[in-house]
Length: 383
Image (cartoon, rainbow, N blue to C red; front, side, top):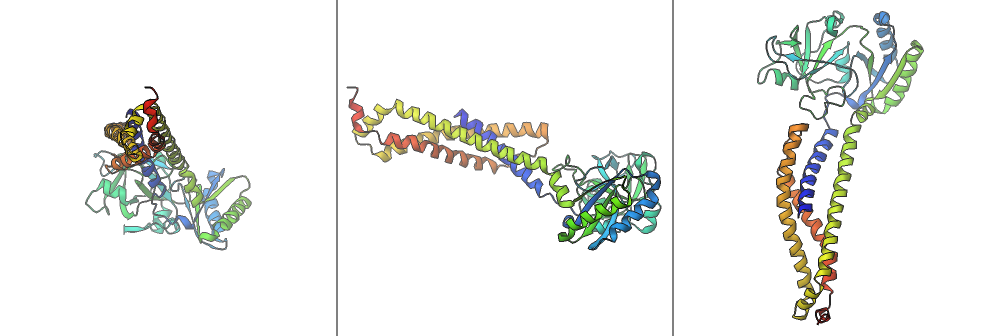
């Protein structure tokens, strides 16, 4: 009974975590992922950024099949992004960190950002924005994701409002876009995974990544051509390219590994529980052979003996499952408190109960069949 209770507690929470993590693998991201290739350039001379970046973009746009290219400082699920404490006023409490995307001209179109309200940046807003102290752009406009807008101004329009960064810098919200995921994998599945801001940026040394748009089937060819062109222009730099699909796969490597580990844990735990039931049931059959023989001698059929062991196992499993449900709730409270896991939905409890009932009945079937074959003569052997 205790073994089944423990198995129920672990199984319900493990299946819940598996489902929760598996859902993260399909995490939405409002950019055109299937059309994008990302090229990183390291080792450029910062003093030459004003000429190198336009030159590189022109070279990328000249590749056959490329429909757009733009410079950015960070990319969803990628590396490198500032995180700012933002708020609706200088005095209000700051939200959890919002990722900072600084993007060059044409980046909204290349990324495929979907405008919910407002507008994208104008050309003069890109040209007049460079980095200042604290790595903040010198412009005064910003675009925010819908999730961040709802967090800062719930039930109110965000357009035209001031966004404060760190309580020191303020920007006017000119647009709201559909939710774009933050860089990196640490925030996957978190409530603030879509808190992000977009600032316009001119040709600045911080712009070390390029996003290239093409048809999905052309991405590998475009990737090879882009790396070759950029290396030819600056042989002293380090060029790293990948499709957005590859970038996303890397970001979710840990999540996929956790899912498979938990699946393996569940299978091993259920197998151990089943073997435990088989072992105990076999022991009970050996201990009760004379009792079974007496029952057979006074008229019990094989079906009666089989039903007896199944019923006994079912009752013990039911008591264990009832205790296991209480343990499941307690374990989920612990996970919620220490690991920010959501509350366990009630549907997982009957699912776990049914699974353990089936395993228990299947596990006891072999010993019960052996018990049903005990002949009545066994009852007289000790007389």
